[in-house]
Picture (cartoon, rainbow, N blue to C red):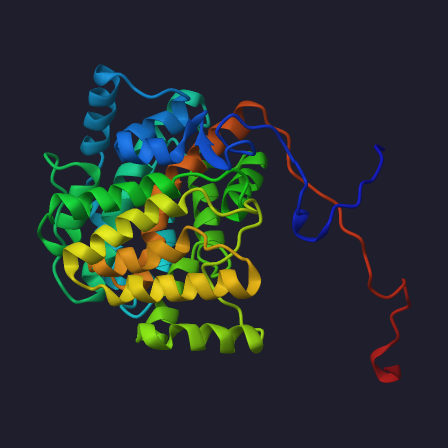
Length: 376
């Protein structure tokens, strides 16, 4: 038996495997996808280009992008049985539960579920990329008691999602801000949900099961659900003039403040400046300036008191709110982006697999005898 290594709680600082998909470059403090800085991708590419990059390792040329987009658009519609299932969901359920159940249903409808070949997994990836926004949008429509709006193949990925949710495509500035958020959320190395998908994949389970596990992990407020908690916090404060006092009180009472700090970054999340820029654009477009005024007050107070920087969830929360999305749909939007990173990791794990099976240190009572019931 190989030497037993005691890892720190939460596997902090532990490298568990190799990956070529993403890395935070220490020299520039930049998150990169296959070597490309995410802030550059956000400014100069579309989400569709990044979705291609994630699983191919290179940005597409025009012909490759056209072929990829055509296939994604072809797969946007979902089976009638999935629509029927969504109509049976409790309207008050969390949208992440809608999404997790919808993805599980997609797996049951795919007769290639046990085929984990690279070609089939690539096709499953594009299907998931295309269908998850449809499930999310239909779930939103169901939750508000409105009819479903079917996908439109002539629209871009982001335009189509807005149209399925609200029945119209918003201004270009709104679509761009949304597209940027998807690029920034697409991937982030071995985070909790991504590691979950790799653990499930390592058992040689199917891609749909791995994605359901990822959705379950991402739902947690300490992970993907943090952008929801940020907006709930801002709505609780409501007034920018009260933000500093609120933050000081929260810190004094050791209250968990969502949207700040990150295990990987020590001098600030490299994605935040870009998302802040587009959240500010949303404030200018909508006239809802109070959320970004509150953002500045909360950020500055946390920096002054604790030296802790905001993470991506902090500007993303108010940006999504100003786009018109209900707070509990923020995390499903995260899934729409992160499906790209998850599937890239699933395929990477499959290509060079070994089951992920750590040990535990038992701290319970020593072995003991079972006494008969009348003696206990």
